[in-house]
Length: 112
Image (cartoon, rainbow, N blue to C red; front, side, top):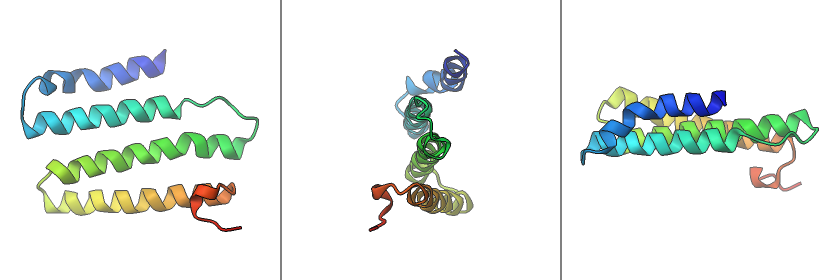
């Protein structure tokens, strides 16, 4: 229930903007979608393996950051923030790969 309330609180303000056809509205709508997907995907059924559960929850959290940073790159103009956004994308992708590798997930690119 707390997750639902948090998600609704995060998303209510952008909904008003989404009614307009502007770059700001498109940016906010993309972020709203990214946050909603992230929150949904972070809800995992415990597997009994803390390591796998951690990766299962953190991967969508990191992917949410990637999706939001990509959205900023599509619509944002500030060069410093664009560099930060690209750094977020690069760093979060690397961390996802490291976490997956740590649990032996074949999608990490590991060829064991």
